[in-house]
Length: 207
Ligand code: GRF
View 1 (spheres, helix red, strand yellow):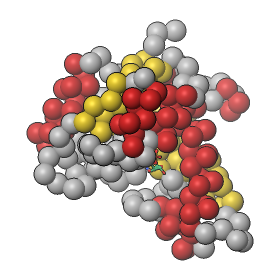
View 2 (view 1 turned 90 degrees about the horizontal axis):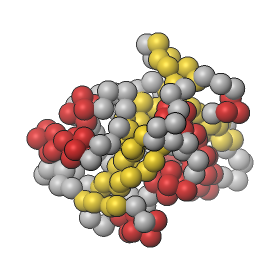
View 3 (view 1 turned 45 degrees about the horizontal axis):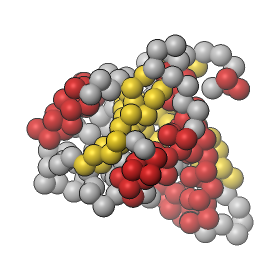
């Protein structure tokens, strides 16, 4: 099967990036790590993992792209032959050019069972709310914040002696499992869409 050239966009530690590099992504090949944060742990991880890592200027804002800069990121990725973009702890709202460049080709991992607890500190939101079941979601990205069609979700029970951090740690372990699975299914051409519904061909085990 033809390989799918994949880029990961990360702003922080990069553990999901590492999980994608080390995990079974099938024909999905992680070629590039792109960051908006010159101090991102993900950037040094890229060096350790032998993946090209690069910082690019995102514009003067803290949590969103400048439109022209996002266009430059999209052009750069297209120029590198990238076909799939995976956001992994990328702390910036996408305004459009990346989605136009990669229609149904931008994914994100979010540490809650969406549509519950979108936005920042989803694990803390879930913990403070007092839910019994937390979890994580891989979804396609649209113009909203954590609103795109759901690809995979995994639940994580909240234990009586959990803290926000112990819960977040167990959620992160599940993130590292489902993100490579979703990328693999996408790159194998096993995902189809009908409106908001993402269907996965094959058995759940084959995901
Ligand atoms: C993860 O919890 C991810 O779901 C969220 O940000 C965190 C990034 O962690 N969007 P890492 O940088 O992948 O370790």
